[in-house]
Length: 251
Ligand code: PGA
Image 1 (cartoon, rainbow, N blue to C red):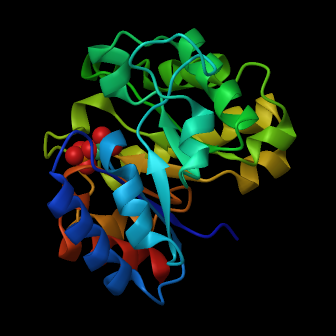
Image 2 (image 1 turned 180 degrees about the vertical axis):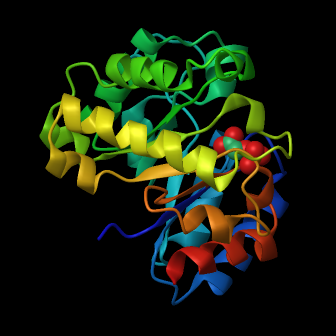
């Protein structure tokens, strides 16, 4: 039986004081809950947040990383640097990276390999645009993003990877996929993993849902058999909302 995983993607929000305050609140409110919990603050607050959450049951995540190793890459932050300051996992392939920063599957694949080499776990984000859904190619788009994103990733390495299915039309819009819509895609993602790897790998991999998941809809989404958790944006910025979701995952 897969345990659940709830991750908060803070995106480009907050200042240092509010990041510390949010982290402190979460350490208290999530204490004793038994799912896997991760928060991903902006790069500049990673260290400050780490000082608050170290030793708790919340792990530190980063929202992105460089596609190159340490060296002359102005403005970039490497996987090794992230690992060095307490980061355990990195979100890669988020649709905001794909569409605002023109990241493609090949680049995301390169980052995944570098993350794994640096000893980081990965949350690989995939998901269709609303135009894809309208013409009925959601599952094909997701399969392509998985195939390309996980190119040359071994089954052993796959144990360090979770997948977040995030329909782009649902991110930050308040429009959530229905539990049935989400479950259907999650089941198809799991069958892609069966085909690419093995039934065992598919049974073990955690597939999170993201896209306007909040304290009001999380319980129903998390009750679906193939939804193993959530990647939460807006609702991860408030202690009470995020904690409610964390509690549903801990049942
Ligand atoms: P949202 O963001 O919960 O604000 O829709 C989710 C995400 O982008 O990971």
